[in-house]
Amino acid sequence: MQESTAIQHAADVLRFVRGIDTPSSRSAMLSTAIANSWRRCVQDYALDPGHRLPARVLDSQSLRSLHEQHAELVHIASAEIDWLYEHIAGSGYALLLTDASGIILYEKSEPTLAESFHDAGLLTGADWSEPSQGTNGMGTCIVERRAVTVHLDEHFHGCHIGLSCSAAPICDPSGALLAVLDASTMDARDTRVSQAHTMALVSLSARLIEKCVFLRHFRDAIMLR
Image (cartoon, rainbow, N blue to C red; front, top):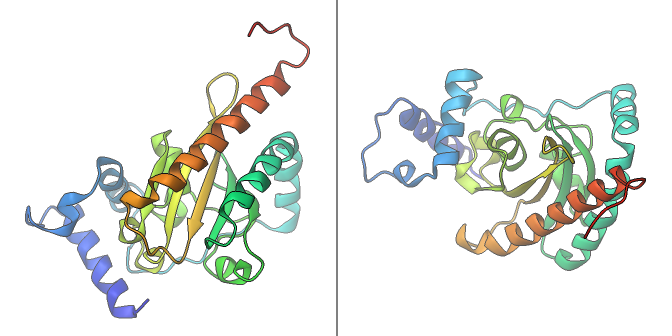
């Protein structure tokens, strides 16, 4: 990604948030979810789209404590993520599970791409909430509480416009947000519309994880099917 492209993207984001774009501009075609996220990033979080923010990563002790807290979730979700990985292996995606605050709990990607994803901040323990990393699949899904695709220059930060992310929420038995499942790629050659297939797979896996969490929670109860 050329630096000039990232700089131009940052300028476009600020023009949109300040309301000085024309109706024919690229940002006039943004979805409501992305547009609202861009506004939050500037107005609520005071983020700069042209400033590269290194991912905030938990220290080993904090991450160990978080894993202990979510041990059952990770155990259940990792099996489904491993299954999903077999269906998208070779397509250049990393599969990521975050907690409800946006901290990555579990990751799976092709070994040859792992270093590149880590360099981009997509690694276990990293904070991908909106206040930390701006508009992105995981963080925006947490705020929206629904499945979200953030494709290329729909990301807030210029340093992230090479990414395409599709994320779906996972709720606990009470309906509260428990986690987010995300598929991210740094080699998005397809259009945003074509990301629908990936989004469908991610949403299906999220629902299956949700179901398993529900069954595990009520394992000692009598359930009618």
